[in-house]
Image (spheres, rainbow, N blue to C red):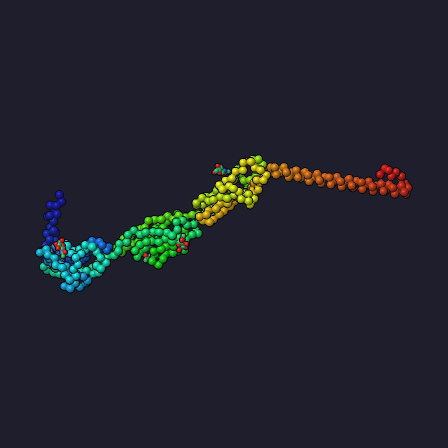
Amino acid sequence: MDLPRTRHNPWRGLFLVAGLVACSLCPASAQIYINPEFLKWFVGEESELIVMDMPKVVTDISWHRGTQPSEDTRIISYQPPSKTWAPGPEYNSRMNVTSYGNLYFSRAEWGDTGHYTVRVATDREKQTATALFQVGEPSGKPGLSLNATSVAEYLDPVLATCHTDATKVLWHVNSRLVSSNDQMTLSPDNKTLTLHWVRRYDSVQCQIVNFKDEVQRSELIVLSVTYGPYDVSLWSKPQNVFDTIGAEIGSKVEINCTTLSCWPSPKYRWTHNGAPLSYSGHSITLWSLTKEQLGRYRCVLENPATGLSLYREVIVDRPRDSLQADSSFHLSGYFSGVLIVLTFLGGVSLCGLLAFKLTQLCSARRNPVLQVPTSDL
Ligand SMILES: *[C@@H]1O[C@H](CO)[C@@H](O)[C@H](O)[C@H]1NC(C)=O
Ligand SMILES: *[C@@H]1O[C@H](CO)[C@@H](O)[C@H](O)[C@H]1NC(C)=O
Ligand SMILES: *[C@@H]1O[C@H](CO)[C@@H](O)[C@H](O)[C@H]1NC(C)=O
Ligand SMILES: *[C@@H]1O[C@H](CO)[C@@H](O)[C@H](O)[C@H]1NC(C)=O
């Protein structure tokens, strides 16, 4: 609907005239160039050097090795008007010029790397363009390997190797790009990464950038990390008070040891007063406590994968109540002993007093004031 109005725009005619004037003064076409996005190819790939801004009417297109186009360096030329191809001294059967004027390689080879120059002729002018064509090895997805299947947390080092022919290698630990630091060291070529210590859940991945600047990542490996034990909890029935379980002779006693920080699950060992017991589970049950079973119990948690072990101890003793009964008995015994001694001492002192009194009497008698028969003593 707007079209008729535009058509009647008075400026439009003016621009058209200006354009026609400009075209008759300027070169007929823009400067040609070789598409820079398609200059890197892998060995064996079908590839093409693409001419951009090619003039509409071309009389001759010739491709040359190097930067100086001459008959000596000519690979092949093509005349669009006659649709004829003419190979030159640098011609190779893997190469040809397409009808669009591009240099086509049926298969790129290492030796093709180098500068190429195209010369395009029209009725009016000749234009040239040069570009560096590069052929490299493809770098596929890199391989990643570790020198250990399982490592102990904070204890073992692990060496990761990135298998690739790429020269640019980067590493990701826990999905973050890393460089050498106090936990890890990269080799000078970045192909190996040594983790001096690891934490559980640590993951490793290498990444390569090939010469076409394409990024490829290896698989991501989550390290198999063993750890602990770092803690031991002890539970018992009857419940322990600090390090003592009070239990009656003949009652049932259960002791459990657990840990929250151990992988794989630890091995358990138990000792009673230092002597090993045959239990190997995380708990022991004394079904009917005997006097001989009183004493110190120790559970030992061992993780063979980390080489770490921890233990907890608890004493099984008769409850405080019966302990008090015992002590009160001992106390009363003590008191009765004291009483006997006191009674004895009291008796002795009474006798002494009596004897003293009697001596007094006797001497009085000798004086002679009083006379008591000796049989009275
Ligand atoms: C180049 O390609 C054209 C078109 O496919 C073909 O006719 C011509 O023979 C080829 N020239 C050479 C030298 O291979
Ligand atoms: C893995 O490599 C590191 C670093 O070289 C080394 O310290 C460690 O012992 C190796 N581990 C094994 C299981 O070979
Ligand atoms: C090696 O890795 C570091 C740190 O990520 C990086 O800066 C450097 O460019 C890499 N060097 C090579 C040759 O890949
Ligand atoms: C001890 O462990 C056993 C088995 O896991 C469980 O049945 C029991 O309730 C535990 N006892 C205590 C006192 O934690």
